[in-house]
Length: 352
Figure 1 (cartoon, rainbow, N blue to C red):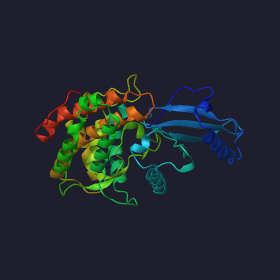
Figure 2 (tube, rainbow, N blue to C red):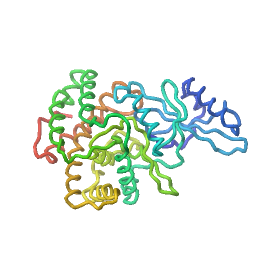
Figure 3 (cartoon, rainbow, N blue to C red):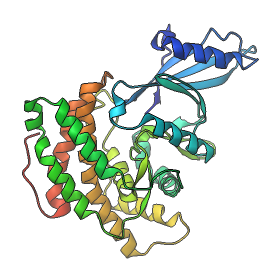
Figure 4 (cartoon, helix red, strand yellow):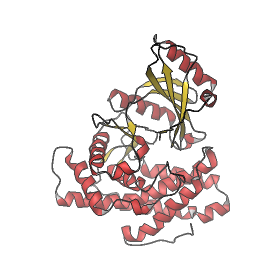
């Protein structure tokens, strides 16, 4: 998740580990027009909640800024959430498909990527009908990718694994406050509710918030980035998660605060789903659109549980300045508020 900071931090190289600097200088030396491989301009990028991300500028002999790269430092403890080797394989495969930046180099706790010359979207961009239509078509293209490896649904096992990790990390008071001991049954209920044969399985991004979407202003080409959480899943979950992310603004003064008044209304959801389905070349029937919309609303519950658990775990393992516990509280609160409406029945709601 990266949004460019307007201010270059003096002595920015202090943020980078020695191994990263060494690899960067080697990379700069390979470009003959770089003035001095030892002089690199480092700009921290805001909005990252799993990794730390930096833009690296290299000046050429003509004084032009021709070379930019992106350095990604892996967050502490995030291997709890995904397998880094799998994520790297996905990254390289996506690059071969022409879907994202190229991998330029790796080091022990991070990597260097090609810098995409496009702008990262803002929270408001997701509400722009034209941009939203472009995202819908791009997401369908992403979901249709034929990626190597098992094509089994990962969502439910991931939720159970994260639940176990959260239970291991939390104090008894935290466990009670978030109702963690009740969530195994909630996960099972959702899995049963969403196990119909009509569910379409595809390669899902699983974290399609605005900071993971870039757009070339001239060509209007959309690029989806950051594949840490990508896996095969029901595509309805990917749509639902994207809709849930419209409540967030990670570049505000209180980035952990979610505003569910910004959740897309029925007309916006219909428009997005219609564009998503029709981008394959066939116009969807009203029944198809209605079925997807119904499933998507149920998958929003799975999104709330998954990212609520992510918030709890992150509070215990990640040192990035973000109020993960308050974020988790809001996701769980939304789950219990919406469950009875979406599923038609409720469970025992803890105080969160």
